[in-house]
Structures are given as structure tokens and as C-alpha cells.
Image (cartoon, rainbow, N blue to C red):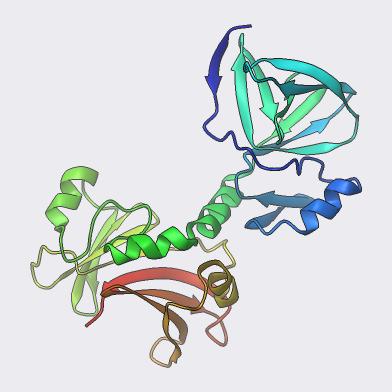
Length: 264
């Protein structure tokens, strides 16, 4: 068989494939990966889809030479998380973890998460230790520009004109897409003062989630802002501060944005 593509999502995680059943449910209950509800189960970090077995079909194992060998049967009615795929001779093979694959055919049904679920997951997985590491160096994860070093002209040269721009509390903002915002000094400053990552309105991230993911050692302060009714969880990373700003009746219910700025 001729192999033409291997998905970059291939991972060597444990086999959490069955989303119903006994042993696998027990294993999944101890799974600490970020996840969101998807249909009647959970979409977890690293998962790109799920496959439901409509008719008993072959269970394929990856061999050391990269080939796939029949090794048992996947039973009708079971659903497996898909973490990767390969295309061999024009046919898709879905990787369900631990080197196990299932061939795409009329015997299986493959489904990918909706755009909303993908956005939710993107926000969840962004919050991990390398977010603080990047912040030390003056940039937010997913952004290529460094505050107090790069200029808005450099941003425009690479990204083009902003999606939106305007004035905000003594600075000018430049928004790119639905996620990234850069700030400069008024009236015509060029240097990037700070940057924001806007969390999707469909995401539901609490202060506890952030603390569990990033720890508490670097927390600089935690406070309620009467000015705008938000709760601010602030981490100190080198000379920079990274604000996690939450909305809600008590200011602690949902993360609305992450703001990186240099400590004054």
C-alpha cells in the first residue's frame, strides 16, 4: 500500500477510544485533559473527531514498519475518539489512539466537531504553561509580535490592515480577526504597548480552571474591579503582567479576555 499522507495530529496517547463501555469509561473519568461537552460525550485536547461503528469492522494495529495489520474487531454500536488519520491509496484510516486504526467505509460513520466546539477547545488549550513562558518574552501565545519592541507598522506589514481599530482609554487599538488586539499610545504612537487575546463568547473558563492549568506560584494579585465589574487574576512573568479578566454577576464566571502588558 502506498502511504501519501500522515496527519500531524498523530499522538501516542493512551487508548481512550470507546466513549461508552466499562473499562474505557473508567479510564476517561481520570482524564485531566481540557474538554468540552460534545453530543453525549466529551471532546478532549488532541481529538479531531469521532467514529461510530455501524457494522462490525476490522481493528487495525500500526506495525513498526508503518503498515497496518488486522488485529481483532471493533464492534457495532461503539464510538471512538479520533486523534489522527492517514490516507493510504486514497482511503482514510482513522487513528483512535495507542496505534489502533479503523478504515473508513460504509461500516463506520466519522464526525468532526462543529466550529463552535473547535473555538471552545482553542480557548481551553491556549491556557497552559507556555502561555506564561511567552509572556515573559513580551508576547501572547499565537502572536508573533513583542510588546515594547515591535511596532504597529511591522504588524501591518505582515498581517495587512486590521479588522477594526479605534480609541480605548488613552490608547489606539488594532484588532486582527476575532482574537488578537494590539495597543499603541495616542495620538500616533507606533510602539506596541500591550496586546489582548479575546476569548470566544461560547467558552466557559473560570478562575479555578486558569489556576489549575497555570498554578498559583506566579500570581501577582487577584481583585475585583468596580470600574467595569470584572474580576482580574493577574500573573507576573518577568517584567510583564498578564491579566485574565472575567465577567459575571460576581466577576468570576467567564473569562472574556487575556491582556499582556509591561509592569509600570
